Image (tube, rainbow, N blue to C red):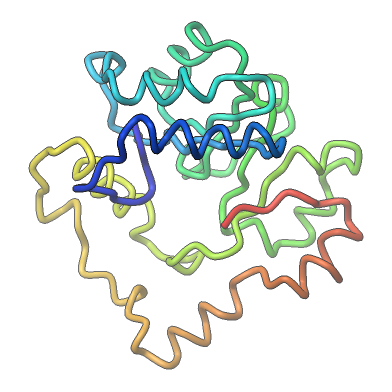
Length: 208
């Protein structure tokens, strides 16, 4: 069910997972599960490993980040204690985000909006803490392949065959390019900006 990154190979033992979960529980730290694979089918909902982890983490303090309508409905029905967050992957087109707050506990804003202060100032101050801002996506906000990358990651995680159209030779990801590094640095939300720009505007939820 994972999305956004690829993690193939080592699979931790249940005991290791339980130790980590218990540490978070004991310290009252929220566990946010990133279950944002956009290519899931109904068959994938019965994955035992994923269901086991979601069962172990379920309580009112924890949240699940979703993008797939299939998985979202399944989580809401089977694991109702979780807070539900809307993923950046679900926002490939600009929409009116305010009505979505009736459906989601939090919404992760697309990268193209996180430094758009005209947009950020247009959101009512009383709900700004329900919007989460992504600080350091590896793609620049204008990358034309962002959602193509997510599609390729999703298929790889599902052990599906990757087509040449799914993985793009993306020059925007070339960190050896000095101009690319500078552009990327300028687009990140830095700690200093969080303190001086975002917190005074009542934005206090950030995603790495």
